[in-house]
Length: 81
Image (tube, rainbow, N blue to C red; front, side):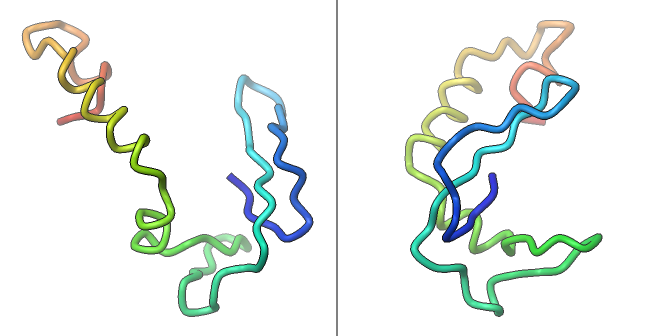
């Protein structure tokens, strides 16, 4: 996800089956909420988590609920371990 006051609220599909969402935000987060890494300005983990909608966390819970720990693909099915 890309946060920008100039965002267009569209999905950008670069190569290799990846995607980026160009989110228009009224203003950029405070400098204290950003961390620089490899030339990118990233939200701190705490800021990113409080910015996520409740439905994101509900989705994690529902994926985990449907997980079968005895399945050979358990470790990749929901990332719960």
